[in-house]
Every structure is written in C-alpha cells, then in structure tokens.
Image (tube, one colour):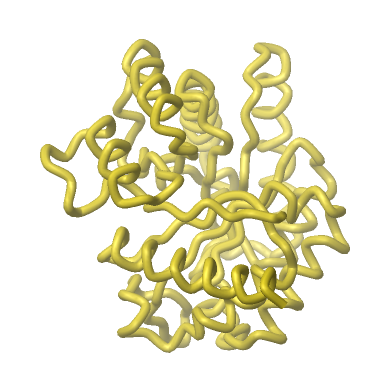
Length: 282
C-alpha cells in the first residue's frame, strides 16, 4: 500500500524548548511521521550534533529531510556568488548525510533578467558541478530542486522536471502551493492529477514512489507567492489534492509549510487516512 508520511516544515510551533531534537520528539508525540529541518537561514548543526539528532529521529521513527539556505543563486552574475551557492549546497548535503535525512530541498536561483533557457543552462551547469563533487566524496543524499512560487525565481514545474530528467541524480520537490501561486491555476483534482502524471511520465514510476511534497495555504498576486497561509484561510483545495495523492498512490514525505504547521499537518494526515481507509474498504 502506498504511504505518505506527513510532517512539519521546521520545529512544531508547540515545541518547548525550540530545539531540533525536541521538535522531533514533539512530531512523534503528535503522531506525525516526518520533519523537514529548516536550514533556510544557515546550516546551524555541525556533524556531531547532526548524528545525535539522527539517533533520536531513528529511535522515534521520524523521517527527516532538509531545506537548504535561501541564499543560493546558481544563476548569479558574480562567479563568487555562484561558488558560494555551490558551497552552501554542498555543506547542506554533507550535514544532511550525517542527519540520515532523505533529501535536501533547495531553491536553485533567479532569472536575473535572463531568458528562461539561458538561466536553465546556467543552473544545470553549476548544479552538475555540485553533484560531481558529492559523488566523488560519497555523500549519498538526494538533492531536490523545488518548484518556486515567484515569477522572478527559476523553478517552474516544467523546468524542475526537465532538470531532474537531464540530471538523473536529482529528484523534484513539488510545492503545490507555489505552483498554484505561480501559475494562477492548478487548484483542482484534475490539475493535481495532471501534475502527478507529468512527474510519472517525465521521470518514471520512481518519482511517485519516493516523492517529496510541500503543502500549505498561500496568498499570491500577479507576481506569484506573497506569503503562506493556514489551509482553512486560503483558497487551496487541499481536499482535492489529498484525493489526487491517494488515487495516484504516491509515497514519500508530505511536508506542511502553513504558519500553524503541526495543526495543518494533522489536518492533512487525517484527511488522507480517511481517503485511503475508504478506498481500502471499497
């Protein structure tokens, strides 16, 4: 039976004290199955600390992923900034390995006024150099470029899937709220299913057998994402999304990025289990 583990983007709000280990313990207490360690402002764990965190997560059967720092731009104008972004991504992957994290989610960069194809080729070239270094060093984690929410950011659904197809060491991070905000659509069962089938068609069955999804409410305008919202305060049709995930038999992690992240993660898990239970009974 296909299975999604639902979890939080970062330490649950209700965790006291707000440490990574206590966050994992709180995730387990809540009955959730995953936590994404948010290195978005910097990689705050060293290797020894990461191994301690990994031990706690293993003992509690909480799956971990990692989100890399936001300040990566593999299409930057200055070579120094590109090298810095590559170094940040490499460092994140190194610590993710010590965490036993399954994946490193990251935003690849910005268009910087370039044509989309020009930006794509730059991102691909600079990312392939990071992948080569990780392979040489035996760092076995999956890098996942994320579908972005702003039109100024590299990362349409098509760009992310193409990048993963041409660099098969990669797998996508599909953020449904971002794609909804960026496209102005993709907010119905049929459209959610179309995204999942596009993943399968471009990357094979494995893309849905070990997937990584982000789910949240979102506020957006003509330039795309403005901010995340709680699900019930947004227009995201999350019930239809859950049905698409259940019907497609997707497995992997579903990480909630709502401001009330553990509440919405539990809401999503309950809805998903209701759907899969009904399907099993049928």
